[in-house]
Length: 162
Ligand code: ADP
Image 1 (cartoon, rainbow, N blue to C red):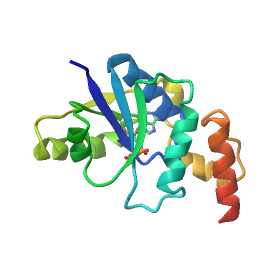
Image 2: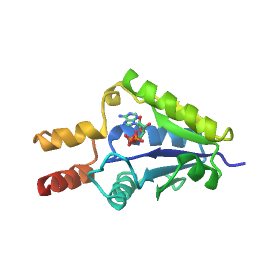
Image 3: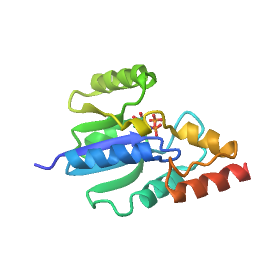
Image 4: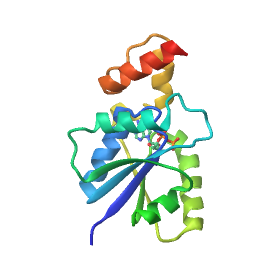
């Protein structure tokens, strides 16, 4: 039987930290769905379509076992629909821990059929976040070490137009 995992998030925008987690996920699972949350409570800089497009552009040479989609509603419902048994989340500094633990337990309350699997990035991506990228671009900093060129270009244009 094929192993399927879902990697959900806002991806506003995708960073090299997310990309590392995607690659690690592909090492373990036959199929990985990057599930871009269409409706998020915090107002995103990019539309869902833009976020999906950037994930696709940033993973162009990747294996066909990777799928990128926008989704609405509960992650567990999406995962069940995709016949996934696992939700992948990235775990960075301890600041992620409380929130991620809460989410994982809440999802387990919703269904016991899906496990949450935490993957750690390498040290160089440990403190990297989408908010940091937006902040840096807004302040005129260089972000090419943290995101693909296509992302840097899009974010710079979007922030300049704000
Ligand atoms: P969300 O709003 O759902 O947290 P994000 O796009 O910020 O969406 O993150 C999606 C997932 O990727 C989360 O599990 C987050 O912890 C993880 N993640 C974000 N940045 C990194 C990074 N630099 N290294 C590893 N995991 C990361």
